[in-house]
Length: 115
Length: 113
Picture 1: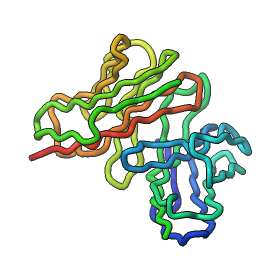
Picture 2: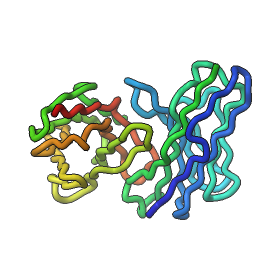
Picture 3: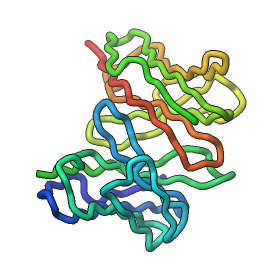
């Protein structure tokens, strides 16, 4: 079974703090994603990575950055957390291109509260 | 451009009744279509998907969905609801070969005893 692991399930941070959300997958997937989930808004793509050190902005990248130093690990960084970044963050991975059956494999989520 | 509309943010059904969750999409290319389920405090897991071929797709836990191109719909059904089906359901669309997945806003299903 594919396993996508988000190391922190619940975090509470203060405004202005730097926040790291870590995601690791064990299936050698090239593509990895960070989504933000808010009630009534569904899932919105923050960043996407299709290879090590490669990244692309999603629909809502402002206030976020990412790091992909190793294929299995994709980190989301909030340089200076703000209260409007209080949300559920979901990491996902999948195969690319012609091998892509299209299914996204999700982690269990990281619920971040910024005070 | 692609988009997904889920009609009804909350749906309640009685245990044993038919479950019908609606999803309409727009896409300029033949889409891949998905239904995901999210149980409380968990990530999303795939229920079923349509890529090509048979338009009636069967998934896990007794769910199925039918791709209707003429109606641009991909509604999710289950003949008989179970208490364990209470969850949030998301419809999603992607364009084959792309990384872009567009999710609907979700439908929370409540099952009444």
